[in-house]
Image (cartoon, rainbow, N blue to C red; front, side, top):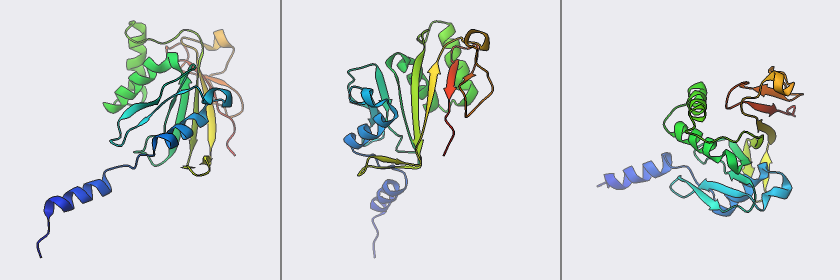
Amino acid sequence: MKINILYCTVLLASTLGAAEVAPRETQIAAAVLAAPVELREGAAVLGYNPKGDLVTLRAGKNELICLASDPSRSSFSVACYHRELEPYMARGRELLAQKVTGQQRNDIRWKEVAEGKLSLPREPRTLYVLTGTGFDAATGKVTDSYLRWVIYVPFATPQSTGLSTKPSDSAPWLMSPGTAGAHIMINPPKK
């Protein structure tokens, strides 16, 4: 019996290495769930093509950009943020693709903001993050959903905001104070 090695290799690679990318409309429906209801219809949506590349799935008509869940990850995570945060977010995705993570990724972006190489609005701008263990496209429901909010307030401090820097699930708190990436975290208690 002769086995076609090339065929087996391609079949194995497609079975093991490729994440299934949801249809365009499913990605859009899921991504906008992070946004306030009244802003969902007009939000731009970034998602994934069949090759797994990040692409624009829908042009926007308002100030929000929503990001579909990454098909290469097993958990569900979508986000929506003010369009003026896109250069900052795009640079974060670029660094992540280069395997630059954690504090190093923040330090690079903050330095680029300080040097005027990276745009970040000086006024508060909001990021909505919705996570869960899965998404049912038929019902449009997220399993074990958790919505949190991040309000970017570049260079804010506890003194300028009156907020604590101690993490809390019952009150807003300031993360990364005094930096370009300073932001107010609002994490509701988990169910």
